[in-house]
Length: 307
Image 1: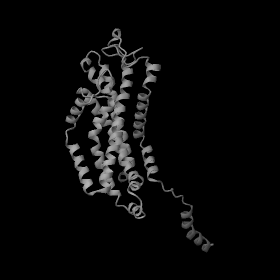
Image 2 (image 1 turned 135 degrees about the horizontal axis):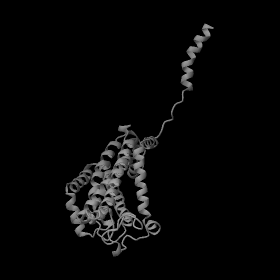
Image 3 (image 1 turned 135 degrees about the vertical axis):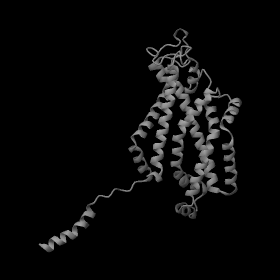
Image 4 (image 1 turned 45 degrees about the vertical axis):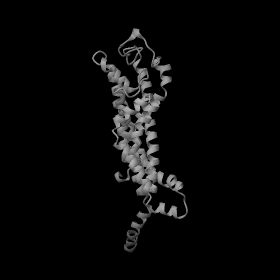
């Protein structure tokens, strides 16, 4: 009996090891997604941004079904109407429905933000990958170009471009992106310089893989986490830039509605009709705050150093 118990004691540790459940290895993307989902505040901020984007996209539907007004419809008999039916957020100095203009303004402001991010990421990624992958004289030329763009005062460039081109949502997005791509190029170049020295890149090159295949199939996926973080953090910053340009008269011009020019036009009527300032101001604040929170959550989830 004693011998059997000793044998059982010797076999228990092995049996425990064999019976222990081991967690299957997860890919980088699955693990990052799990960390992002665990951040409830960050996920809530992301959902809020998606909801606001969907509302902006469905602005014509909201005008037809919910508010029953168009953003440029003038009703001089209902100027400065207080919030309530049928104008749920009141009206402005021309009797235009504030809720309708706020929804359509989100269509313009968020459209400028997302288009600017897309252009900045596209140009910055291309320049950064070429500079980091090939190096040498091409790296020197492209990085000096980036240094030149970043050295120009942004407000001076905004003023110059706004004078040369009439500020429409598309042209304004291109104007802002003409400055923003430089920082993206630097980030991508740094990542490419780090990744291209790894063993799997050297092994892929040794079997005859071409440069385009190396850049798009192997380097770009490793740079994507940096691009995702840059995009998520950039949306809120661009919304503030667009609002500032509208305040200076260099952004979207009335009667086209945007959150920035709604806030600017309401400045003179703050003490008379404060809701004209409150609603677009709170919308900008909430959107930028949600964008920054979601961007920080993505950074925490996708940065392996913060694991």
